[in-house]
Length: 267
Image 1 (cartoon, one colour):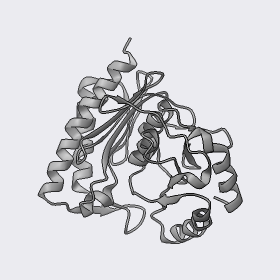
Image 2 (cartoon, one colour):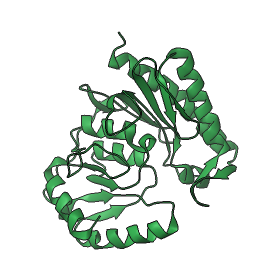
Image 3 (cartoon, rainbow, N blue to C red):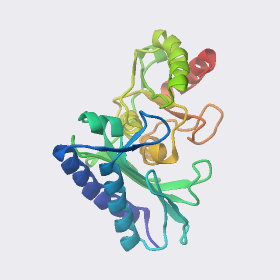
Image 4 (spheres, rainbow, N blue to C red):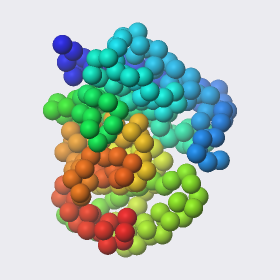
């Protein structure tokens, strides 16, 4: 039986290779291949190339495992394990040369449904910063071999909150209106543009909380496991797993206060 540690090593080696490919393509110049849900929801040729590499490596090393990637869809599992992949999380950052993008790979037990799966191992690799976040279920979370632990802010007013916005312009305006009242209740708000890195930043204590609606499974699968293994509260205020409905990852000391604030503003 394959151990979680062995699954992690597979994720790490492939994420490293994929991240190095993404960085090379960024240095050579980036071309938009297509738009998806809206004109600003883009995919580059590099996204597709990097995902193809990840998919091929997993097929060779883990035949029979399922696959669920942002750019190439799903392959059903024959083993009970499914790999959830975002080849370049933060594609707009990647396009503009902003050094906040990552390869995100998680392996989960079960079907590719975040409400029912059980994440086993994860790797989020930022090739520009050379930062590798990893976690295994029950084994802790690490950044470049240093064990991670979440922050412990005294209250919400001393907490740095991150979020993200929809690609749909109408929905984005609505989200901005909801987020605005939170500015007076937290230290400040960040919108970095790569959910996997935001979630790992909570694990590292660089952020105190991250909340967003509308995330896809590949956006949060790896980062939520890393944050949870670093001690973050990762269940929503309603007690649900992260999903398109809500991703709620927070330092435990302010989780209840943040939940109340979100309810107050109708987040």
